[in-house]
Amino acid sequence: MNRWVILDRDGVINRDAPDYVKSLAEWQPLPGSIAAIARLSRAGYRVAIATNQSGGGRGLIRSEDLHAMHAELCRQVVRAGGVVDGIFYCPHAPEADCRCRKPRTGLLDAIARRFAIDLRGQPAVGDSLRDLEAARAAGCLPVLVRTGNGRATEMRLAAAALRDLPVYDDLAAVADAFAGPQL
Image 1: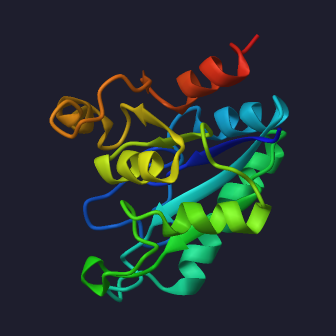
Image 2 (image 1 turned 90 degrees about the vertical axis):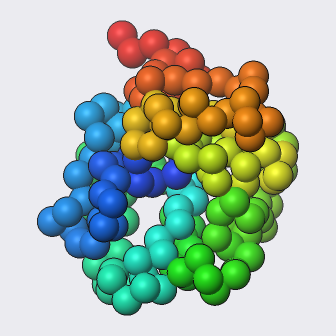
């Protein structure tokens, strides 16, 4: 069985911004996140990223800037000894009511189709309720990190009927749990 881990981007891998991360100059990996992705990859996990990027649909992020951020993320992971197998994103604004914007499962469904995998039980790491709700609806194991919006999300888990899911301080702690501690 293939082991996968699906990651949200903003707030999990890189710093989030209330006015969107709009360019490569604004894209800043969170401490330890690149090394964590590489560790997961070296431990036999295939890594996919599923991210809402509504700044595109709002006219705030150019497609070429988004691609530059994703190319840099992949370059950094490769330099750290890992691989990102795919990046899937929803560029639509919330009012577009598309199927790919989390908490809907369109991005996760696209990953499953592209790689011909069963998502049931595969960890999907996020920092927001919409990430966790999409993961649960797709049959993944929702995993919360406290980075980004994660601390605020943790306070809302019981009300969202998402109790009893794994919660970690950051992506490095997720890698420790799933790939084993770094030596």
